Image (cartoon, helix red, strand yellow):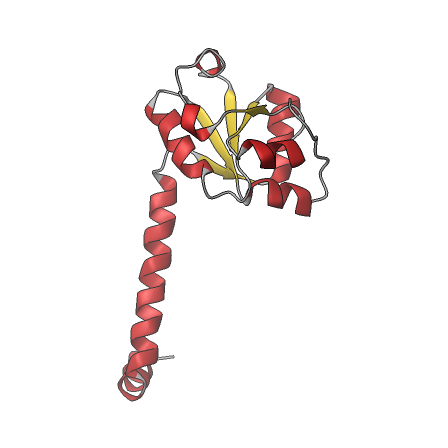
Length: 145
Protein backbone atom coordinates (compact mmCIF):
# COMPACT_ATOMS: atom_id res chain seq x y z
CA UNK A 1 0.00 0.00 0.00
CA UNK A 2 1.46 3.36 -0.98
CA UNK A 3 1.11 6.73 0.70
CA UNK A 4 -1.14 7.89 -2.15
CA UNK A 5 -3.55 5.04 -1.46
CA UNK A 6 -3.61 5.82 2.26
CA UNK A 7 -4.21 9.53 1.58
CA UNK A 8 -6.97 8.66 -0.91
CA UNK A 9 -8.66 6.35 1.64
CA UNK A 10 -8.39 9.01 4.37
CA UNK A 11 -9.92 11.60 2.05
CA UNK A 12 -12.86 9.36 1.21
CA UNK A 13 -13.38 8.05 4.76
CA UNK A 14 -12.46 10.83 7.20
CA UNK A 15 -14.43 9.45 10.17
CA UNK A 16 -12.87 6.01 9.86
CA UNK A 17 -9.43 7.58 9.56
CA UNK A 18 -9.94 9.76 12.64
CA UNK A 19 -11.26 6.77 14.60
CA UNK A 20 -8.25 4.68 13.54
CA UNK A 21 -5.76 7.36 14.59
CA UNK A 22 -7.59 7.95 17.88
CA UNK A 23 -7.69 4.26 18.79
CA UNK A 24 -4.06 3.79 17.83
CA UNK A 25 -3.02 6.70 20.06
CA UNK A 26 -5.13 5.40 22.93
CA UNK A 27 -3.50 1.97 22.71
CA UNK A 28 0.00 3.45 22.59
CA UNK A 29 -0.66 5.76 25.57
CA UNK A 30 -2.18 2.90 27.57
CA UNK A 31 0.78 0.61 26.94
CA UNK A 32 3.32 3.31 27.80
CA UNK A 33 1.46 4.03 31.06
CA UNK A 34 1.54 0.30 31.91
CA UNK A 35 5.31 0.34 31.63
CA UNK A 36 5.69 3.12 34.18
CA UNK A 37 3.00 2.30 36.75
CA UNK A 38 5.33 0.37 39.07
CA UNK A 39 3.36 -2.86 39.31
CA UNK A 40 2.47 -5.62 36.92
CA UNK A 41 -0.74 -7.34 35.97
CA UNK A 42 -0.67 -11.07 36.68
CA UNK A 43 -2.63 -14.03 35.42
CA UNK A 44 -3.96 -16.64 37.86
CA UNK A 45 -1.11 -18.97 36.82
CA UNK A 46 1.51 -16.28 37.50
CA UNK A 47 0.00 -15.64 40.95
CA UNK A 48 0.14 -19.36 41.73
CA UNK A 49 3.77 -19.52 40.61
CA UNK A 50 4.68 -16.57 42.85
CA UNK A 51 2.89 -18.13 45.80
CA UNK A 52 4.56 -21.52 45.34
CA UNK A 53 8.08 -20.42 44.39
CA UNK A 54 8.56 -17.13 46.21
CA UNK A 55 6.13 -17.20 49.13
CA UNK A 56 4.19 -14.22 47.78
CA UNK A 57 1.83 -12.41 50.11
CA UNK A 58 -1.65 -12.26 48.58
CA UNK A 59 -3.89 -9.58 50.00
CA UNK A 60 -7.56 -9.41 49.13
CA UNK A 61 -9.23 -6.02 49.37
CA UNK A 62 -12.72 -7.23 48.45
CA UNK A 63 -15.67 -6.52 50.70
CA UNK A 64 -15.69 -8.99 53.61
CA UNK A 65 -18.88 -10.66 52.31
CA UNK A 66 -17.25 -11.28 48.93
CA UNK A 67 -14.05 -12.51 50.59
CA UNK A 68 -15.99 -15.01 52.70
CA UNK A 69 -17.78 -16.36 49.61
CA UNK A 70 -14.56 -17.01 47.66
CA UNK A 71 -10.91 -16.01 47.92
CA UNK A 72 -7.51 -17.22 46.80
CA UNK A 73 -6.39 -19.91 49.28
CA UNK A 74 -3.85 -18.45 51.67
CA UNK A 75 -4.77 -14.84 50.94
CA UNK A 76 -5.21 -12.31 53.73
CA UNK A 77 -8.20 -9.99 53.85
CA UNK A 78 -7.53 -6.28 54.30
CA UNK A 79 -10.52 -3.95 54.25
CA UNK A 80 -10.10 -0.98 51.93
CA UNK A 81 -11.10 1.36 54.75
CA UNK A 82 -8.28 -0.04 56.92
CA UNK A 83 -5.64 -0.47 54.23
CA UNK A 84 -2.28 0.80 55.44
CA UNK A 85 0.98 -0.18 53.71
CA UNK A 86 2.78 0.26 57.04
CA UNK A 87 0.56 -2.18 58.96
CA UNK A 88 2.22 -5.07 60.79
CA UNK A 89 0.81 -7.49 58.18
CA UNK A 90 2.22 -5.63 55.19
CA UNK A 91 5.37 -3.79 56.33
CA UNK A 92 7.53 -6.93 56.76
CA UNK A 93 6.69 -7.99 53.18
CA UNK A 94 8.37 -5.04 51.42
CA UNK A 95 10.96 -7.31 49.82
CA UNK A 96 8.55 -10.18 49.04
CA UNK A 97 6.25 -10.31 46.05
CA UNK A 98 2.86 -8.87 47.05
CA UNK A 99 -0.21 -9.62 44.96
CA UNK A 100 -3.37 -7.56 45.34
CA UNK A 101 -6.71 -9.20 44.62
CA UNK A 102 -10.25 -7.86 44.62
CA UNK A 103 -13.56 -9.15 43.32
CA UNK A 104 -13.33 -7.91 39.74
CA UNK A 105 -9.83 -6.42 39.50
CA UNK A 106 -10.98 -2.80 39.60
CA UNK A 107 -9.88 -1.77 43.12
CA UNK A 108 -6.56 -3.59 43.00
CA UNK A 109 -4.60 -1.07 40.87
CA UNK A 110 -5.27 1.75 43.35
CA UNK A 111 -4.02 -0.38 46.23
CA UNK A 112 -1.01 -1.51 44.20
CA UNK A 113 -0.06 2.12 43.50
CA UNK A 114 -0.17 2.86 47.23
CA UNK A 115 2.10 -0.11 47.93
CA UNK A 116 4.61 1.01 45.29
CA UNK A 117 4.55 4.54 46.69
CA UNK A 118 5.22 3.10 50.17
CA UNK A 119 8.39 1.38 48.91
CA UNK A 120 7.24 -2.13 48.08
CA UNK A 121 9.57 -3.51 45.42
CA UNK A 122 7.55 -6.30 43.79
CA UNK A 123 3.84 -5.58 43.50
CA UNK A 124 1.37 -7.34 41.25
CA UNK A 125 -2.35 -7.29 40.63
CA UNK A 126 -4.46 -10.31 39.74
CA UNK A 127 -5.97 -9.08 36.49
CA UNK A 128 -9.70 -9.73 36.47
CA UNK A 129 -9.73 -10.36 40.22
CA UNK A 130 -11.24 -13.41 41.84
CA UNK A 131 -13.59 -13.69 38.85
CA UNK A 132 -10.57 -14.45 36.62
CA UNK A 133 -9.23 -16.87 39.23
CA UNK A 134 -12.52 -18.79 39.20
CA UNK A 135 -12.77 -18.63 35.39
CA UNK A 136 -9.36 -20.33 35.22
CA UNK A 137 -10.81 -23.14 37.40
CA UNK A 138 -8.38 -22.50 40.25
CA UNK A 139 -9.54 -23.55 43.72
CA UNK A 140 -11.10 -21.02 46.07
CA UNK A 141 -11.33 -20.96 49.83
CA UNK A 142 -14.46 -19.87 51.68
CA UNK A 143 -15.05 -18.26 55.05
CA UNK A 144 -12.59 -16.15 57.00
CA UNK A 145 -8.89 -16.75 56.56
